[in-house]
Image 1 (cartoon, rainbow, N blue to C red):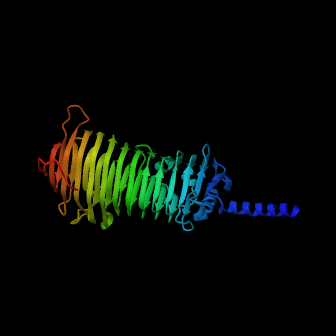
Image 2 (tube, rainbow, N blue to C red):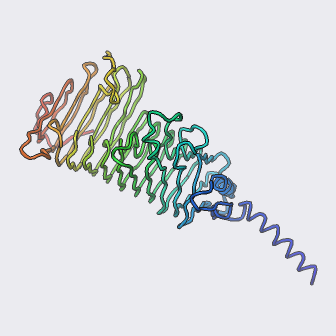
Length: 408
């Protein structure tokens, strides 16, 4: 009998040991790996420990879940979550509590481009009702004096089959969510917010990524709600409430004479409220490449400064950009069913370069009126060609047509 009891005890110890190493479990609570969650003590090492343990989960056990529990605030220094040791079953990260960055830039350990970075993770799902707070207000006030460049809050690189949903993202020092070199991405039901005056606090930045779906989210920032940069293709954006901010932008493209591209971009059923721009395409002079096959449709505008704008003379607010003989080619852009108001006199701006200009611009069912009583609005158009029908205000350099159908 004693022999049996001893054997059972040994088995229990071995099993418990394996469980603690992550081989026999699928749920990994950061509190079990040393996290405190009082918002004062650095919990970075505990998070990495729990992450690494989750990555060791055998495929036969199912997808592991890393849990950040509710009613706790976890302080994290810049942290990298690498998927190099994970299997293709992926990792689920359930965020129920709050994750915060160091409040003072001087408290950050080292100069980094991103606060929380995820790399080389396939089938990563991050979800929950929690909050990720970059505590960026001091970074914004130090923008021209701080020694380190302002970091983005979340950065994802080479994360195929990525899903982000449910979370609130607050006050990043710079951009809130950056995704690059990733395919098959779904972003939904997020609330991203930063003050209108916060510099460069983009909501979502996409680059070198394809088949990205962004939907049903509220984005309030000091810069682009969504920016689709070089290498963005097959992007679907639906049901986004943007404002304040700088709108949904394709670009900027072609900076420093580079070859850059963006194509197959579809923006539908979105609203812009008090934004600097609505539907924007921006390219630098001297660059090359293309922005093509772009659709904006079923758009609601509320006192937007530039509801529709293509700017091939983009200079990021500077005034020293030299004229150039080449530019990124902008073509096959359709605007359909825009309704609402403009806070500026020029509701539509096509500021295109002489070569190559903007081609095959199609406008249908556009009705933009002034947000200011008794103010007339107009359209500015230079070096653009295409067609329009039922468009207010009329665009002088496009041909009027009675057609009501279009092909993108």
